[in-house]
Length: 108
Length: 117
Image (cartoon, rainbow over all chains, first blue to last red):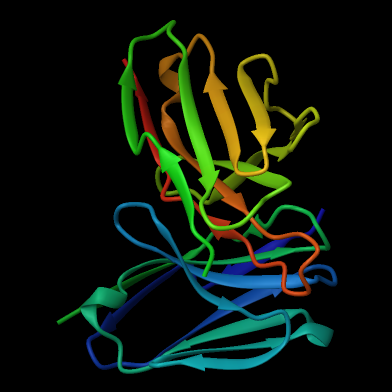
């Protein structure tokens, strides 16, 4: 099956700093999504981005499907950005396969 | 975006009892839903694929007789943990999408935290 690797596993930032999270996947995919899991466990959809670049406020993401990786950028980080960020991929009609996540801690 | 709900949000039960968790797509029809399990500090692991009107497909290592899945309508899938034991304590999350759409984005429920005492 498809393998999804995320890096770094842990990231500690001061408020206001920028960061880049990476997701590598082992095979071609139809779908790639980035999620933020809040302290209550809810998965928040950040981006649906099988290819190209998208931006939403301080967050942006880029997927280079031909090279099998995606990047999530967080600018001017805030304490509320803390949590676990997951990348997940799938092929047509199948379940999403998740990476192990990046745990982000932002301190004031 | 599409909304997926789960009920209950948390449940505590005694060892040996059964617990049913509901997953509903509120504003769209989902012929397929997925069930995941997440242990503390770990990622989401796929348990099974729930297909409306047919038997669920279970991932390797998931006991189908223990985790009963019923997808009786286009908006409801249920997961029943039978004869629960403490090792079944976990966070259970379902997801659904809209197959047939060009953009097959998956939406996740808020999860159900199960504690077996």
